[in-house]
Amino acid sequence: MALRWYAITSKIKTKDKFLKEIIRSNKMSPLHAIKDVIIYDFSIDDLDLGHEDSLLKGYALIQLEEKSLKDVVKVVESSKIGEFIGVNSKGNPYPVPKNEVCKFQTKVKRKREKFSIGDKVAVTEGILKGFDGIIVKKNKLMVGVEVKLPNSTILRNVSITALEKRSRS
Image (cartoon, rainbow, N blue to C red; front, side, top):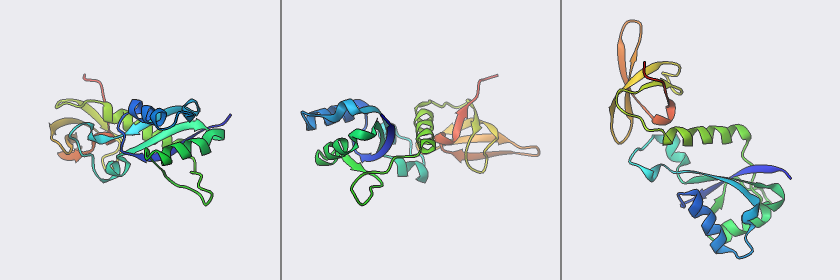
């Protein structure tokens, strides 16, 4: 029994609601075939995390048994839960590569972290990747990170998905 991840666009914002909708939509539900669901939705709070993250908004990854794929596709698409992404000529979605699933999980985890002014952070993406800094401002769109360079200190707005918390010391 091979487990694979598949991507779906969906307006459902939580794992519980997603699974309940699948159950509601089909009495002979293939729910037993779905092993995990990851929902990536940034409308939970007021942060807009930039172009890259807005492309992922409203997406879900589901992990399921490969042998049950056709049944799950029928339920998801007939019930208007969402649509699979990357479908071949036979109507079967392509699995999401494991490394992309890991990136997706990392972004969801980082999104759930709460950042505050004064937090020490490491920048993990972008031009400041590899630098440590301190959050000095926070607004609805981004956080301002102050990074000390050898001859100066700079302040840059950074998406929280490009940050990792460091311990205070």
